[in-house]
Amino acid sequence: MLGPALTLLALGCVEPRSGPPDDAGARDGGSTDVVRPDAGSVDTGATDVGSIDTGPADVGPVDVDSPDTGPVDVGSPDTGPVDVGSIDAGSLDVGSPDTGPTDVGSPDGRATDTGPTDAGAADNGSRDVVSPDAGTADVPCVGGTRLMCSGRCINRLSDPAHCGVCGRACTASESCANGTCIDTRADLISLGVRHSCIVTRQLANVHCWGDNSSGQLGDGTVMSRERPTMVPALMNVQGLGAGERHTCIGRPGDVMQCWGDNSSGQLGDGTTTASRSPVRVLTVDSVRFLGAGGAHNCAWRSPAEQVWCWGDNGNGQLGDGTTTSRGTPAAVTGAGIALTVASGAAHTCVRDYDGSVRCWGHNGFGQLGDGTTVDRARPTLVPGVNGASSVTVSIAPVRGAPPTGSHSCAVNTSGTVYCWGYNGFGQIGDESTTNRPSPVDVRMLPSASAVAAGGFHTCAVAAARVYCWGANDAGQLGDGTTTARSAPVAVAGLPAMRAVACGLRHTCAVDNSSQVWCWGDNAAGQLGDGTRSSRPTPARIVY
Image (cartoon, rainbow, N blue to C red; front, side):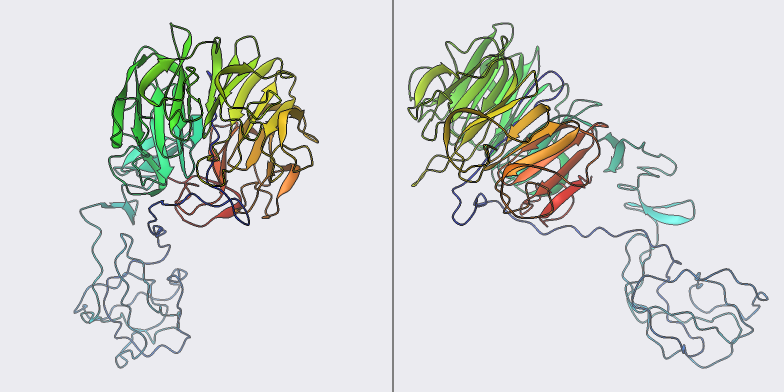
């Protein structure tokens, strides 16, 4: 859902077999190894020619020996690079060459040993005389991304204490990315099927991560990302929607832009050509509230105060009274003054200024909430939902044979959450798996402030905690299990929260300090934690 303070959209996916499946076709890349700074001494790559080490070989990180308490060695000058490891604790060493393991550690910017390390047996005394190392020499801490700051070699592109230059420290709400301190607090969040996007607080620019097989991350590539990457040249963004394989943004008083898949004209530029970078949506500007669906979008345009939709229209999801797809926006009649716009796989819902909810498009599972399973090409009032403060719809696809389910939810100003539509995994939250063509109350949930519909699961924020229910095959409910639930369960390990968004099989939430946490499926890096490992409990995104 989208709103003046924070917009949440929930998107879904493909037909499950034994459980809700993952979306096919994401381009998978390997996870990035993150090398931590070495807390030990700097390795100069030379072979130790001291006495034979009688201690066990250390195959872990370099030991940090305690300071020398004995006399200073005054041996003869070194014939190789100076060993700047821990100071010898004994007397002059005149022993035979060391037959222990040779240090062949590769350079990492902090000269971290990766080979066996001397476990600290005391030398017989003298200053070690080192000869040239026969292994791979360590790269000195000079040039490129390396800097010597405060006596240690750092990566200037990612070190938060020395971001870009020595002494430039990022604040607690910032991360160091490419040598620049970036405010990582999120004002808006939206999840696609297998990608995630936020709008940051400081500059209102867009960061996305996860699947990028159709260019939906907007960084000019089709390379999937396990960490947030900024969409270039976008600022002052106040509307955000992540669709199945595309993304859109809106800015009051400025143009609307979309990028990614365009097979149904969902980018709104009058073509069906995909774009890896933002393109302008024709005829629609000054957009704040928008919803990106499976292959269509809808947005509320100011000052015209009207909903416009474009893209796929096979089930009437554009609301223009036809089933003709459109590559440019068309006005929707009868949608009212929408303050929340939510687009699913093939249906759309809006929350009007008076608190009513209207839906249109595909209705095979009762997801329009009008008590029937008949598709509607015009907005239809959802009976029984009054005083709604937001509305959300899932993006579980309806295309293909057999079609999969889709559901919708709303929360009212009293904190009651209503859901309707497909309920095969308990995502309606009424302790059953029976489809509901009319809204029903979610049971055993405290008074809620926000709700988000995922592919086959649902989550809400209630009493500053996140609760989820429905499918859980990838851990998307965040309760530490993979057990489906037909009633809400609390997500473990989170601070006080204020917003939540759902994708196909993953979930992200925003805490009260505007930091982002994610859990569930991570096959395309959509959790933003720098890995491709799925997790059933939350972890903060990592820049």
